[in-house]
Length: 378
Length: 246
Image (tube, rainbow over all chains, first blue to last red; front, side):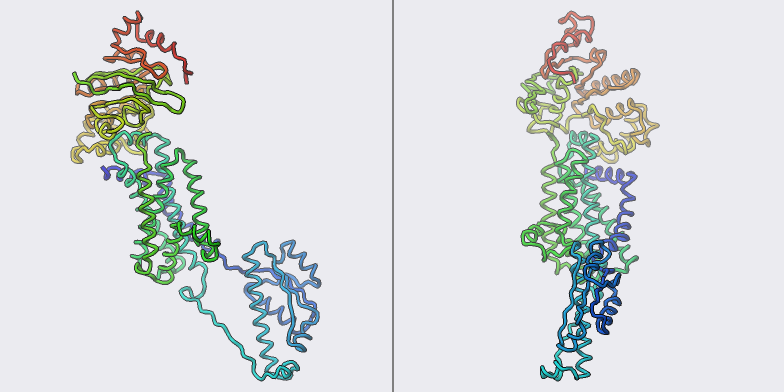
């Protein structure tokens, strides 16, 4: 009996003018567009420098900022008000102000101050902008300190009684993603979103569509069991999910040269479980919906929340405690973790035991629910 | 003669609305039982309960000897159903629909191709075997739906307005198919709005406002209401209806 139902699903799917195209085009679009659009690396921060000192040092510092790949020097203003005006009109993101006695203080007292004002409307940009700026200034300060140390003629240096200044250099090393490439971080997670959308929506819309057309009633009046019915909807989309998965990882390798560090078996094994989880969610929602619109909106509602707290864009560890607790009930979170770990760290099934077990529990609960909530009679 | 459908005070309520109001009747094997009533009288609801698609609010019903509420899956094994709304898969070919339903009812896979050809030649659609169902005219679709409903030789077949919107010639052919099915021992339970079709039934019940107001052979009903034809009988009864005609 199951064989005939599955055969029917495949025939309908392949005859559908939309689904076969979706299977190829959706991954292609996601991989070509999203890694660039969902990039959170911030460059091109516009800086307005207010130099009140016009000294050799202040010029050097300005030059250093302008030379950074993160900043564009858009203006050199003469007054702070003028620069703040630029922030208001959004031509500048950061105002960097150098005080009148910058060089004099630096050489005479060994201490000087600068002011960084950032436009914090976009918190991410503001934060990173001030961090990058601080790094440049610190770097500049080190340079100056070295130079002054070599010339050893400075007043304050002798007073302090120093002969050599201890400097601790920090050398960051990015493990697993040496160049801190944002794309390498995003692509495995985008694959999760792709599978969630395709394998969550398609089976749900399929069932609700049968409800709307009325064909489901003809099936409900036959002896087809709930289990067979749900399984017949699940298996074809499971196969679709694996095809989409294959298309995506091949594209990632071809276009970005991104090859998973871990083995393919681990990837496919985890994906097989994950597809059951999202398809199960879709089926549960379709069982409780009577129209396409209803199913679409409910699915959207859940997916947006699940994606937000999945750790796709923002680290879960920096969320408030309640959100962190909530994200424990989010299957996306676990699969994103798995994908990133396999792709970047080369983790294998043994390392991923906790995540895989959790996903399996989700799969059992959701599909069990889908079978129980499917009503052959009203 | 044995009884294949029996209801006792069968009732279905949707909130405060009583769609089917304590109906009791029985249908014998091999009968063509005409289930008449105005739109909204509760025919489809009653039929859906008998098919196990809808649960009764109260009362009992037995179809093919099984309790419609507690043994609905056994009921489903023994019946065929053709709904008001065409419900075969339009995006499957004619033979694929037959294959699907034959498979669902457990017809042996090797026998399916032969059964398909037999069925199609019987309804004169052999040439359309590879056509997509959505391309067929309505009358052909209805004939196909009927043959799919009786493909597994059910004991009873439920037909909900099978000839609605179908031309007179096809309707005639459709009734020939119904007669042929009864000759094979299949009991037919049919709803219709065509009173000439009511004359073809062995017995007819007329539902008004969720209740069965009359039940007898067409001949006896005509005598009882001293009417010329079933049309007159129907109009006399249906005029009493208090529900809005929707």
